[in-house]
Amino acid sequence: MGRATQEARQAETSRPVQIIGRLGMSGYGVVHLVVAWLAAQVAFGGGGEADQKGAVSAIAAQPFGEVLLWILAVALLGFGLWQLLAAAAGYQWMQDEKKRLRRRLGVAGRGVVVLGLAAYAIKLTVSGGGSSGNQGEQDATATLLGLPAGQALVVAVAVVILIAAGVIAYRGASRKFLEDLELTKLPPKTGHIVELLGIVGYIAKGVAYGVIGVLTAIAAITADPSQTGGLDKALHTLAGQPFGVVLLVAVALGFAAFGVYCFGDARCRRM
Image (cartoon, rainbow, N blue to C red; front, side, top):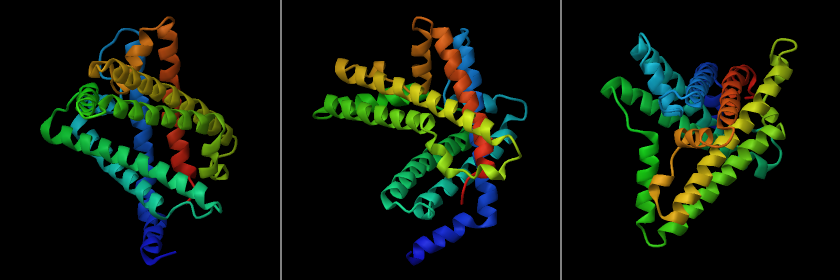
């Protein structure tokens, strides 16, 4: 282990970073619970942007929203940095180097996403507004489509999203997420509940992101960036299908399960 890796490992396992990171993961769970609530509103004809940015905006709209937003932003910053430290030097207990590398890449991706959410929360506290997630996706797709071989590039993005969605769902169905946990740290009889919540939550997230991948592929095939979108558009697309309300309620429950799972994960994640 090199000096830089050693220092990252010491930082990751230090008590202050562990406390901040675990509290931050609980904050990440809160975001998913709010997404679940927004998705349920979409299922029954309500408004609001049903994605992670929409969840942060919904928190900002509550009484003392600015204070709550700053707390959430600090928590998410801590969690994101904790994930990046884990990506640099974590998972030392894994003997298989390729497997360790895959897990590090996974937490690096999550760390980047979480830091993006933290930045968005800070932006809301400073400026009081933010852009639509769907609009951002559509602008990015339009830019790609305007490049040489643009349709092929967007198809490639769709394939990456679909692969990522499959990995997320598989991680839940196969219980792979349990490798990162020490369930013995939880109170008696709660380990099985956390396991069940993780299975349901990961599969639901995989399904939702799979719809995003399909929408991106449609945008590539039709060369129409308005067809693409983020999680909010994916959930609205589900709502428009036969039995859409049932599907959307199921996904909302899955996101709620993942949100609660995050609290258990924060308590018993391996160092």
